[in-house]
Length: 189
Ligand code: NI
Image 1 (cartoon, rainbow, N blue to C red):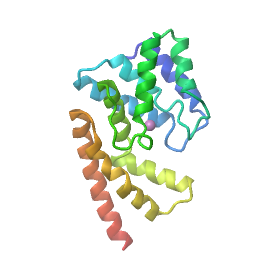
Image 2 (cartoon, protein in one colour; image 1 turned 135 degrees about the vertical axis):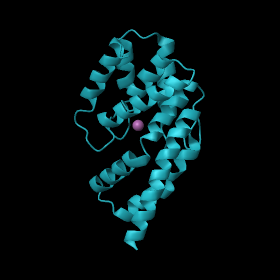
Image 3 (cartoon, rainbow, N blue to C red; image 1 turned 180 degrees about the vertical axis):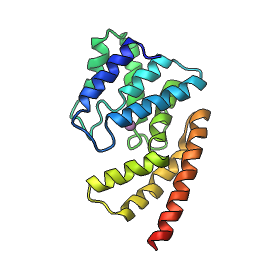
Image 4 (spheres, rainbow, N blue to C red; image 1 turned 45 degrees about the vertical axis):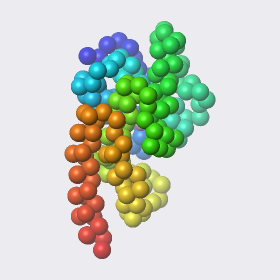
């Protein structure tokens, strides 16, 4: 399943993220890639585009990198002689998946929808809880701040999924989030 360019994209992002460990680095990207490939299996879409877009989706994340015009993603794709129109498709997908920039908006291609669902899945469920507290810890935020974040952002994601497969996976994770929050709020009272 892993072809040459996939292997090289993984190696490329491993190097990019080497310095980063706040939960939005290489581990996140690899989970998003696996989620994306799982969803892509069930949806009619171009799996090569889903694969590369998911692997490169945070390669120019403004929280981590100070690049312009998706320079990190473009560098990799150009180095590997990806066709210019395919590069633009992939860059378009990457720019359409960010939650903060695209609240309530959906990507216009099925490949974009798959990658956005895969990214959102990684923000909910047990992994979403772990990532939220990891982030809160490293930014000096309290447990209550984290609870607010669940209510303001993470609990809304289930209803914003694009694909049937993504929605199904999100529902399980959403239920888990709800039961965790119920218990946490009870213990915090
Ligand atoms: Ni992401």
